[in-house]
Structures are given as structure tokens and as C-alpha cells.
Image 1 (cartoon, rainbow, N blue to C red):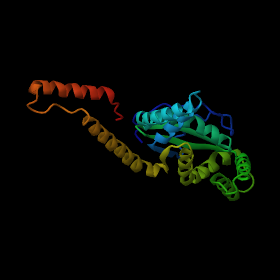
Image 2: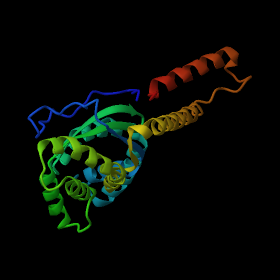
Image 3: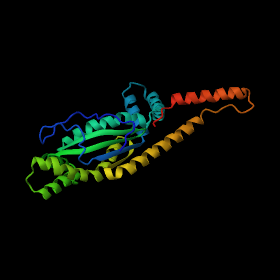
Length: 270
């Protein structure tokens, strides 16, 4: 998939348990998943962050309440999803391998696209420590009785290959098996986690066969929304009426000045 506004991978090199080899790069010969994240609304998260900061200030309660309302409203208008994405995408690339490693799954995550409120990560499972994965999930399920997708995947994989688990299986068969089970479960899970942080987002995890159609549809959507914002902002620079006190030449100058001001304050995504 062609990438626009791409960034270099941010995850630190990891050691593959199978043979001590670095697993910091995507293996071209193995399948990958694409994690598509679109931030629809970040205003509540921004308001919550501002409110938490002001709560720490030693101010009279009435003043703090009025100030919180005003600053929350102002911050929600100023901080756009694009700014959140700038930090979120690289952070996910760093944190995802660490979180999955604790569950016995070695993954590589690379950011392959970022545009406006939309970004895409490429994900590949490269090694599975079956025993560690089952153990980690059993600990989690003591608090949450519902069996998770990782436990189902590990148990299903072990049942199919038998109880003897060797390095070739953990680096060959099981990664592909676990990755296939991750695809339908991972998107809703990420979406729920972001919702807990007051971020309204849509998350789709797709294989290579379906990514292209989804990706280009999302890019078209983002561009259309960006163009609508451009048109709306242009309306905020009204020109003098014909026959007004400025004359036609002044109107042309005013139009040019308005366009220059608009271009200097609006950061285009594409």
C-alpha cells in the first residue's frame, strides 16, 4: 500500500525468543495486518485534561468553576484530532509490542500512514510463546471470567499441533494462527480502550486483501471533510461589497490579503 506522510518505525528492536534474532522489521514473506484508526471526536478528552490540570490549582471555588468551563470550551475548539494523532500514532508503535510481549506474543508495529485524524499501523506477529500466553491470559481471566481471543487462539493452536510446542511452531505456525484470530477482535478492543480515555474513534483491523479498498475510501473521506473545513473558513473572510468605499482595486487587494491570511493559518493535511 502506498504511504503518504509516512514516518519511520518507532519501536525499539526486540529480541526474538526463538533464536535471539532481532525482530524489529516486518518480514516481507509473511502476512501482515493493518490497524486503521480514525479519531472522530477528541473534545471530551481535551476538556477532561484541562479540568484535571485546573483542579490542581489553588483557586477560589467559584473562580475555578468559571475558569474551568471557559478554558475547557476554548481548548476543545483549539486542539484538533490531528494534534492528538501526532502523539498517538508513534506512541502506539512503541507500546503495542511491549503490551503484547507480556502476553507471550512478539509483534512488530510500524506506522505506514498519517493524514489528519486518520493513521494506519502495519502489524505482524513474529513469535508466540504459547505457555506464557496461556499463563498471562489465565491470570487476566481470574478478574474477567470471559475467555479472551488470545486464550482461544493459543488453546486452539495447541490442540491442533498437539502438546509438544517447538521453536519452529512458535515462530511459524502459531504466529500466523494467532494473527488471524486477532483481526476480528482487535478493532473493537482498541475502540473500547480509546472510549475509556474519552476519545471517540473508529478502529478497523484488516488483512492485506481488504486494506486497499478501505484505505482509499478513508482517505477520500478525510479529504472531503478537510475541503469542507476550507470552504467554511473562507466564509469567515467576507469581502467588501461591489461599489463600496474601497473600490474594485481595493477589493482585489482585500481578496488577496484574505487568501494569504487563510493559507498562513490553515495547515493542510494532504
